[in-house]
Image (cartoon, rainbow, N blue to C red):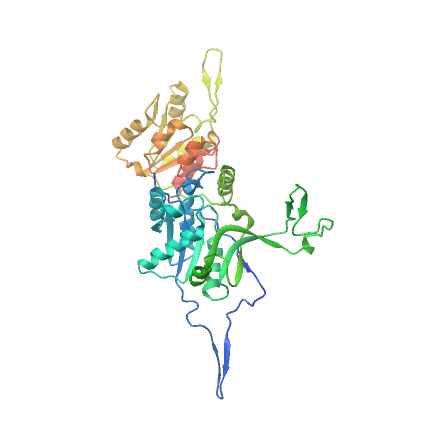
Amino acid sequence: MAAHRDRGQAAGRTRLAGDTREMTMDMTVHTTGESTTADATADSTAGRTVAIIPARGGSKQVPRKNLQRVGGVPLVERAVRAAVAAGVDEVVVSTDDDEIAAVGIAAGARVIRRPAEISGDTATSESAILHALDELEAQGDRFDVVAFVQATSPFLPSDALAAAVDEVRADRADSVFAAYETYGFLWRRDADGAALAINHEAAHRPRRQDREPHHLETGAFYVFRAVGFRESRHRFFGRIRIAEVPEWTAIEIDDEQQLQIARALAALHESPEAIPVRAVVTDFDGVHTDDTAIVDADGGERVRVSREDGMGVALLRRAGVPMLILSTEVNPVVRARADKLRVPVLHGIDDKEAALRDWARENDLPLADIAYLGNDVNDLPAMRIVGWPIAVANAHPLVLEEARVVLRRRGGDGAVRELVERVLSS
Protein backbone atom coordinates (compact mmCIF):
# COMPACT_ATOMS: atom_id res chain seq x y z
CA MET A 1 0.00 0.00 0.00
CA ALA A 2 1.35 3.41 -0.92
CA ALA A 3 2.26 5.82 1.87
CA HIS A 4 -0.12 8.71 1.98
CA ARG A 5 1.23 12.22 2.01
CA ASP A 6 -1.77 14.50 1.35
CA ARG A 7 -1.63 17.51 3.59
CA GLY A 8 -5.32 18.29 3.97
CA GLN A 9 -6.11 18.87 7.65
CA ALA A 10 -9.13 20.75 8.91
CA ALA A 11 -8.57 23.47 11.52
CA GLY A 12 -11.25 25.07 13.60
CA ARG A 13 -11.88 27.93 15.94
CA THR A 14 -11.12 27.16 19.57
CA ARG A 15 -12.70 28.48 22.72
CA LEU A 16 -11.99 27.04 26.13
CA ALA A 17 -14.91 26.82 28.53
CA GLY A 18 -15.32 25.20 31.91
CA ASP A 19 -16.01 25.96 35.53
CA THR A 20 -15.91 29.41 37.06
CA ARG A 21 -12.21 29.36 37.93
CA GLU A 22 -10.12 32.20 36.54
CA MET A 23 -8.19 31.31 33.38
CA THR A 24 -4.96 32.77 34.75
CA MET A 25 -2.30 30.81 36.58
CA ASP A 26 -2.71 30.82 40.36
CA MET A 27 -0.07 32.93 42.04
CA THR A 28 0.90 33.27 45.69
CA VAL A 29 1.86 36.81 46.68
CA HIS A 30 4.60 37.17 49.28
CA THR A 31 5.19 40.56 50.93
CA THR A 32 8.46 41.56 52.57
CA GLY A 33 9.56 44.84 54.12
CA GLU A 34 11.24 45.83 50.87
CA SER A 35 9.34 44.28 47.96
CA THR A 36 6.42 42.17 46.76
CA THR A 37 6.98 39.13 44.48
CA ALA A 38 4.60 36.83 42.62
CA ASP A 39 5.80 33.24 42.58
CA ALA A 40 4.34 30.93 39.93
CA THR A 41 5.20 27.29 39.79
CA ALA A 42 8.39 27.37 37.78
CA ASP A 43 8.02 24.06 36.04
CA SER A 44 4.26 24.13 35.36
CA THR A 45 4.75 24.95 31.67
CA ALA A 46 7.85 22.84 31.18
CA GLY A 47 6.17 19.42 30.99
CA ARG A 48 6.80 17.18 28.00
CA THR A 49 3.70 16.10 26.10
CA VAL A 50 3.03 12.81 24.32
CA ALA A 51 0.08 12.19 22.01
CA ILE A 52 -1.04 8.56 22.19
CA ILE A 53 -3.27 7.18 19.41
CA PRO A 54 -4.77 3.76 20.23
CA ALA A 55 -5.45 2.02 16.91
CA ARG A 56 -6.10 -1.69 16.99
CA GLY A 57 -6.47 -3.75 13.82
CA GLY A 58 -9.85 -5.32 14.52
CA SER A 59 -13.24 -3.67 14.05
CA LYS A 60 -16.68 -5.24 13.64
CA GLN A 61 -18.76 -2.37 12.21
CA VAL A 62 -16.14 -1.07 9.75
CA PRO A 63 -13.49 -3.64 8.78
CA ARG A 64 -9.92 -2.30 9.14
CA LYS A 65 -11.49 0.96 10.36
CA ASN A 66 -8.29 2.74 11.39
CA LEU A 67 -6.89 2.29 7.87
CA GLN A 68 -9.99 3.54 6.07
CA ARG A 69 -9.33 6.68 4.04
CA VAL A 70 -11.01 10.03 4.46
CA GLY A 71 -9.87 12.67 2.00
CA GLY A 72 -7.58 9.99 0.58
CA VAL A 73 -5.64 9.61 3.85
CA PRO A 74 -5.90 6.67 6.31
CA LEU A 75 -7.59 7.63 9.58
CA VAL A 76 -4.56 6.74 11.67
CA GLU A 77 -2.34 8.93 9.49
CA ARG A 78 -4.77 11.84 9.82
CA ALA A 79 -4.56 11.52 13.60
CA VAL A 80 -0.75 11.48 13.53
CA ARG A 81 -0.65 14.57 11.33
CA ALA A 82 -3.07 16.46 13.57
CA ALA A 83 -1.00 15.67 16.66
CA VAL A 84 2.25 16.65 14.94
CA ALA A 85 0.68 19.92 13.79
CA ALA A 86 -0.39 20.62 17.39
CA GLY A 87 3.27 20.72 18.40
CA VAL A 88 3.39 17.88 20.93
CA ASP A 89 6.83 16.50 21.79
CA GLU A 90 6.15 12.91 20.74
CA VAL A 91 3.41 11.11 18.80
CA VAL A 92 2.85 7.43 19.56
CA VAL A 93 0.58 4.90 17.85
CA SER A 94 -0.42 1.99 20.07
CA THR A 95 -1.37 -0.95 17.85
CA ASP A 96 -1.44 -4.71 17.45
CA ASP A 97 -1.44 -4.47 13.65
CA ASP A 98 1.58 -4.46 11.30
CA GLU A 99 -0.08 -2.39 8.57
CA ILE A 100 -1.27 0.28 11.02
CA ALA A 101 2.22 0.37 12.50
CA ALA A 102 3.77 0.91 9.06
CA VAL A 103 1.35 3.74 8.21
CA GLY A 104 1.96 5.37 11.59
CA ILE A 105 5.74 5.24 11.21
CA ALA A 106 5.56 6.62 7.66
CA ALA A 107 3.45 9.53 8.97
CA GLY A 108 6.05 10.36 11.62
CA ALA A 109 4.86 8.48 14.71
CA ARG A 110 6.60 6.15 17.10
CA VAL A 111 4.92 2.75 17.50
CA ILE A 112 4.22 0.86 20.71
CA ARG A 113 3.15 -2.74 20.13
CA ARG A 114 -0.12 -3.41 21.95
CA PRO A 115 -0.42 -6.91 23.48
CA ALA A 116 -3.34 -9.17 22.54
CA GLU A 117 -4.91 -9.08 26.00
CA ILE A 118 -5.68 -5.35 25.61
CA SER A 119 -6.46 -5.40 21.88
CA GLY A 120 -9.91 -7.01 21.86
CA ASP A 121 -13.37 -5.48 21.58
CA THR A 122 -13.74 -5.18 25.34
CA ALA A 123 -10.38 -3.52 25.99
CA THR A 124 -10.57 0.09 27.18
CA SER A 125 -8.65 2.99 25.68
CA GLU A 126 -7.34 3.72 29.19
CA SER A 127 -5.64 0.31 29.29
CA ALA A 128 -3.87 1.05 25.99
CA ILE A 129 -2.70 4.45 27.23
CA LEU A 130 -1.42 3.06 30.53
CA HIS A 131 0.44 0.33 28.65
CA ALA A 132 1.98 2.86 26.25
CA LEU A 133 3.12 5.07 29.14
CA ASP A 134 4.68 2.07 30.87
CA GLU A 135 6.51 1.07 27.69
CA LEU A 136 7.76 4.62 27.13
CA GLU A 137 9.05 4.85 30.69
CA ALA A 138 10.76 1.46 30.31
CA GLN A 139 12.55 2.97 27.32
CA GLY A 140 13.65 5.96 29.42
CA ASP A 141 11.00 8.46 28.26
CA ARG A 142 8.80 10.21 30.82
CA PHE A 143 6.00 12.61 29.89
CA ASP A 144 4.09 14.99 32.13
CA VAL A 145 1.11 15.64 29.84
CA VAL A 146 -0.79 13.08 27.76
CA ALA A 147 -2.98 13.83 24.74
CA PHE A 148 -5.24 10.86 24.05
CA VAL A 149 -6.15 11.21 20.35
CA GLN A 150 -8.74 9.06 18.56
CA ALA A 151 -8.10 8.12 14.93
CA THR A 152 -11.84 7.63 14.41
CA SER A 153 -12.31 11.41 14.62
CA PRO A 154 -10.97 12.45 11.20
CA PHE A 155 -11.38 16.24 11.53
CA LEU A 156 -9.42 16.84 14.69
CA PRO A 157 -8.56 20.58 14.87
CA SER A 158 -4.85 20.88 15.67
CA ASP A 159 -5.23 24.38 17.09
CA ALA A 160 -7.85 23.16 19.58
CA LEU A 161 -5.57 20.31 20.63
CA ALA A 162 -2.63 22.69 21.05
CA ALA A 163 -4.77 25.03 23.19
CA ALA A 164 -5.90 22.10 25.36
CA VAL A 165 -2.28 21.05 25.90
CA ASP A 166 -1.43 24.63 26.91
CA GLU A 167 -4.26 24.63 29.48
CA VAL A 168 -2.87 21.55 31.21
CA ARG A 169 0.77 22.58 30.97
CA ALA A 170 -0.03 26.01 32.39
CA ASP A 171 -1.78 24.35 35.37
CA ARG A 172 -5.19 25.80 34.54
CA ALA A 173 -6.71 22.33 34.25
CA ASP A 174 -5.99 18.67 35.00
CA SER A 175 -8.14 17.29 32.19
CA VAL A 176 -9.43 18.95 28.99
CA PHE A 177 -11.67 17.37 26.36
CA ALA A 178 -13.07 18.30 22.93
CA ALA A 179 -16.76 19.23 22.73
CA TYR A 180 -19.06 21.45 20.72
CA GLU A 181 -21.73 23.83 21.88
CA THR A 182 -25.33 22.74 21.39
CA TYR A 183 -28.72 24.19 22.20
CA GLY A 184 -30.50 20.95 21.33
CA PHE A 185 -33.47 19.68 23.31
CA LEU A 186 -32.44 16.24 24.60
CA TRP A 187 -34.86 13.40 25.33
CA ARG A 188 -34.71 9.81 26.53
CA ARG A 189 -37.14 6.88 26.60
CA ASP A 190 -38.30 5.40 29.88
CA ALA A 191 -38.88 1.69 30.50
CA ASP A 192 -42.27 1.89 28.79
CA GLY A 193 -40.95 3.75 25.76
CA ALA A 194 -42.38 7.13 26.74
CA ALA A 195 -40.31 10.21 25.93
CA LEU A 196 -38.87 12.13 28.88
CA ALA A 197 -37.18 15.52 28.63
CA ILE A 198 -33.58 15.63 29.88
CA ASN A 199 -32.13 19.15 29.66
CA HIS A 200 -35.39 21.12 29.52
CA GLU A 201 -38.99 21.19 30.62
CA ALA A 202 -41.23 19.65 27.97
CA ALA A 203 -43.96 22.26 28.47
CA HIS A 204 -41.55 25.18 28.28
CA ARG A 205 -39.86 26.02 24.95
CA PRO A 206 -37.61 29.06 25.46
CA ARG A 207 -35.93 30.79 22.53
CA ARG A 208 -32.36 29.83 21.74
CA GLN A 209 -31.04 33.16 23.04
CA ASP A 210 -32.80 32.54 26.34
CA ARG A 211 -31.35 29.06 26.87
CA GLU A 212 -28.13 27.95 28.46
CA PRO A 213 -25.95 26.04 25.97
CA HIS A 214 -24.69 22.55 26.67
CA HIS A 215 -21.56 20.91 25.29
CA LEU A 216 -21.52 17.53 23.56
CA GLU A 217 -18.31 15.50 23.85
CA THR A 218 -16.85 14.65 20.41
CA GLY A 219 -14.36 11.95 21.39
CA ALA A 220 -11.65 13.56 19.24
CA PHE A 221 -9.12 14.20 22.02
CA TYR A 222 -8.58 14.30 25.78
CA VAL A 223 -5.58 15.98 27.38
CA PHE A 224 -4.58 15.27 30.98
CA ARG A 225 -1.74 15.10 33.46
CA ALA A 226 0.12 11.79 33.37
CA VAL A 227 0.38 11.54 37.18
CA GLY A 228 -3.32 12.19 37.73
CA PHE A 229 -4.23 9.71 35.00
CA ARG A 230 -2.13 6.99 36.60
CA GLU A 231 -3.79 7.64 39.97
CA SER A 232 -7.38 7.76 38.67
CA ARG A 233 -6.86 5.36 35.74
CA HIS A 234 -9.44 7.48 33.89
CA ARG A 235 -9.38 10.38 31.43
CA PHE A 236 -11.50 12.67 33.64
CA PHE A 237 -10.21 13.83 37.01
CA GLY A 238 -9.43 16.97 38.97
CA ARG A 239 -10.16 20.30 37.31
CA ILE A 240 -11.95 19.51 34.07
CA ARG A 241 -12.32 22.00 31.22
CA ILE A 242 -13.81 22.00 27.72
CA ALA A 243 -11.96 22.69 24.47
CA GLU A 244 -14.72 23.88 22.17
CA VAL A 245 -14.47 22.80 18.54
CA PRO A 246 -16.67 23.49 15.48
CA GLU A 247 -19.69 21.20 15.24
CA TRP A 248 -18.81 19.97 11.74
CA THR A 249 -15.56 18.47 13.08
CA ALA A 250 -17.42 16.37 15.65
CA ILE A 251 -18.16 13.29 13.56
CA GLU A 252 -16.81 10.04 15.01
CA ILE A 253 -16.64 7.02 12.71
CA ASP A 254 -18.26 3.92 14.17
CA ASP A 255 -20.16 2.60 11.15
CA GLU A 256 -20.17 2.69 7.34
CA GLN A 257 -22.68 5.55 7.16
CA GLN A 258 -20.49 7.78 9.31
CA LEU A 259 -17.51 6.89 7.13
CA GLN A 260 -19.37 8.01 4.02
CA ILE A 261 -20.45 11.24 5.73
CA ALA A 262 -16.85 11.92 6.74
CA ARG A 263 -15.65 11.43 3.16
CA ALA A 264 -18.29 13.88 1.93
CA LEU A 265 -17.29 16.42 4.60
CA ALA A 266 -13.63 16.10 3.61
CA ALA A 267 -14.48 16.98 0.02
CA LEU A 268 -16.47 19.97 1.27
CA HIS A 269 -14.09 21.42 3.84
CA GLU A 270 -10.56 20.44 2.89
CA SER A 271 -8.54 22.22 0.23
CA PRO A 272 -7.32 19.94 -2.55
CA GLU A 273 -3.57 19.45 -2.43
CA ALA A 274 -1.12 19.21 -5.30
CA ILE A 275 -0.36 15.80 -6.80
CA PRO A 276 3.37 15.71 -7.60
CA VAL A 277 3.74 13.13 -10.37
CA ARG A 278 5.68 12.87 -13.64
CA ALA A 279 2.98 11.10 -15.66
CA VAL A 280 -0.77 10.53 -15.74
CA VAL A 281 -2.55 7.32 -16.80
CA THR A 282 -6.33 7.07 -16.94
CA ASP A 283 -9.04 4.56 -17.63
CA PHE A 284 -11.57 5.63 -20.28
CA ASP A 285 -15.17 4.54 -19.51
CA GLY A 286 -16.31 6.06 -16.23
CA VAL A 287 -13.37 8.47 -16.20
CA HIS A 288 -13.45 10.37 -19.50
CA THR A 289 -17.14 9.41 -19.80
CA ASP A 290 -20.08 9.20 -17.38
CA ASP A 291 -20.02 5.40 -17.84
CA THR A 292 -23.13 5.34 -20.02
CA ALA A 293 -23.49 4.78 -23.76
CA ILE A 294 -26.08 5.38 -26.47
CA VAL A 295 -26.44 2.32 -28.74
CA ASP A 296 -27.91 2.71 -32.25
CA ALA A 297 -29.79 0.09 -34.23
CA ASP A 298 -26.58 -1.19 -35.82
CA GLY A 299 -24.89 -1.69 -32.44
CA GLY A 300 -22.70 1.40 -32.67
CA GLU A 301 -22.04 3.26 -29.44
CA ARG A 302 -21.82 6.91 -28.61
CA VAL A 303 -20.55 8.26 -25.31
CA ARG A 304 -20.68 11.58 -23.51
CA VAL A 305 -17.38 13.32 -22.76
CA SER A 306 -16.46 16.63 -21.17
CA ARG A 307 -14.93 19.51 -23.13
CA GLU A 308 -13.54 20.66 -19.80
CA ASP A 309 -11.59 17.42 -19.59
CA GLY A 310 -10.37 17.96 -23.13
CA MET A 311 -8.93 21.36 -22.21
CA GLY A 312 -7.28 19.82 -19.17
CA VAL A 313 -5.56 17.20 -21.31
CA ALA A 314 -4.38 19.95 -23.65
CA LEU A 315 -2.87 21.83 -20.70
CA LEU A 316 -1.11 18.69 -19.52
CA ARG A 317 0.26 18.04 -22.98
CA ARG A 318 1.57 21.61 -23.29
CA ALA A 319 3.31 21.23 -19.95
CA GLY A 320 5.15 18.19 -21.30
CA VAL A 321 3.66 15.71 -18.82
CA PRO A 322 3.25 12.25 -20.43
CA MET A 323 -0.26 10.82 -20.47
CA LEU A 324 -1.75 7.47 -21.44
CA ILE A 325 -5.32 6.19 -21.77
CA LEU A 326 -5.45 2.53 -20.71
CA SER A 327 -8.77 0.84 -21.40
CA THR A 328 -10.26 -2.63 -21.37
CA GLU A 329 -12.79 -1.56 -24.00
CA VAL A 330 -12.27 -2.40 -27.69
CA ASN A 331 -14.84 0.11 -28.90
CA PRO A 332 -13.51 2.42 -31.68
CA VAL A 333 -14.81 5.41 -29.72
CA VAL A 334 -11.88 5.01 -27.27
CA ARG A 335 -9.35 5.37 -30.08
CA ALA A 336 -11.32 8.23 -31.64
CA ARG A 337 -11.35 10.22 -28.39
CA ALA A 338 -7.66 9.55 -27.75
CA ASP A 339 -6.81 10.75 -31.28
CA LYS A 340 -8.89 13.87 -30.70
CA LEU A 341 -6.97 14.55 -27.47
CA ARG A 342 -3.64 13.64 -29.12
CA VAL A 343 -2.91 11.19 -26.31
CA PRO A 344 -1.51 7.66 -26.74
CA VAL A 345 -3.98 4.89 -25.99
CA LEU A 346 -3.84 1.18 -25.23
CA HIS A 347 -7.29 -0.35 -25.47
CA GLY A 348 -8.66 -3.87 -25.46
CA ILE A 349 -6.26 -4.50 -22.56
CA ASP A 350 -7.20 -7.30 -20.16
CA ASP A 351 -4.08 -7.09 -17.99
CA LYS A 352 -3.80 -3.41 -17.14
CA GLU A 353 -1.05 -3.97 -14.59
CA ALA A 354 1.28 -5.63 -17.09
CA ALA A 355 0.52 -3.04 -19.77
CA LEU A 356 1.20 -0.19 -17.35
CA ARG A 357 4.47 -1.72 -16.19
CA ASP A 358 5.62 -2.09 -19.80
CA TRP A 359 4.64 1.50 -20.69
CA ALA A 360 6.41 2.90 -17.63
CA ARG A 361 9.55 0.92 -18.44
CA GLU A 362 9.56 2.04 -22.08
CA ASN A 363 9.21 5.68 -21.02
CA ASP A 364 11.71 5.41 -18.15
CA LEU A 365 9.09 6.44 -15.60
CA PRO A 366 9.19 5.14 -12.00
CA LEU A 367 5.82 3.69 -11.01
CA ALA A 368 5.99 5.74 -7.80
CA ASP A 369 5.84 8.91 -9.94
CA ILE A 370 2.71 7.93 -11.87
CA ALA A 371 -0.90 8.85 -11.11
CA TYR A 372 -3.52 6.32 -12.23
CA LEU A 373 -7.12 7.54 -12.39
CA GLY A 374 -9.75 4.80 -12.27
CA ASN A 375 -13.36 4.14 -11.44
CA ASP A 376 -14.06 0.38 -11.35
CA VAL A 377 -12.66 -2.91 -10.08
CA ASN A 378 -10.74 -3.67 -13.28
CA ASP A 379 -8.57 -0.64 -12.45
CA LEU A 380 -7.46 -2.02 -9.09
CA PRO A 381 -4.38 -4.01 -10.28
CA ALA A 382 -2.98 -0.91 -12.01
CA MET A 383 -3.86 1.36 -9.08
CA ARG A 384 -2.00 -0.88 -6.64
CA ILE A 385 1.37 -0.55 -8.37
CA VAL A 386 1.56 3.24 -8.78
CA GLY A 387 2.50 5.89 -6.24
CA TRP A 388 -0.72 7.83 -6.73
CA PRO A 389 -3.86 5.67 -7.14
CA ILE A 390 -6.72 8.12 -7.71
CA ALA A 391 -10.48 7.63 -7.95
CA VAL A 392 -13.26 9.69 -9.49
CA ALA A 393 -15.92 10.80 -7.00
CA ASN A 394 -18.46 8.17 -8.10
CA ALA A 395 -16.03 5.25 -8.27
CA HIS A 396 -16.82 1.73 -7.06
CA PRO A 397 -16.47 1.40 -3.23
CA LEU A 398 -13.43 -0.89 -3.58
CA VAL A 399 -11.73 1.70 -5.77
CA LEU A 400 -12.52 4.46 -3.27
CA GLU A 401 -10.91 2.37 -0.54
CA GLU A 402 -7.76 1.81 -2.60
CA ALA A 403 -7.37 5.42 -3.72
CA ARG A 404 -4.76 7.72 -2.25
CA VAL A 405 -6.85 10.65 -3.51
CA VAL A 406 -10.58 10.78 -4.21
CA LEU A 407 -11.49 13.58 -6.60
CA ARG A 408 -14.49 15.84 -6.08
CA ARG A 409 -15.67 15.52 -9.68
CA ARG A 410 -17.44 12.53 -11.20
CA GLY A 411 -16.33 10.60 -14.27
CA GLY A 412 -17.25 12.44 -17.48
CA ASP A 413 -17.91 15.60 -15.48
CA GLY A 414 -14.52 17.26 -15.11
CA ALA A 415 -12.65 14.61 -13.12
CA VAL A 416 -9.75 14.50 -15.59
CA ARG A 417 -9.52 18.31 -15.55
CA GLU A 418 -9.46 18.30 -11.74
CA LEU A 419 -6.61 15.80 -11.71
CA VAL A 420 -4.65 17.74 -14.33
CA GLU A 421 -4.96 20.99 -12.38
CA ARG A 422 -3.67 19.35 -9.22
CA VAL A 423 -0.78 17.79 -11.11
CA LEU A 424 0.18 21.10 -12.73
CA SER A 425 -0.02 22.94 -9.40
CA SER A 426 2.68 20.76 -7.85
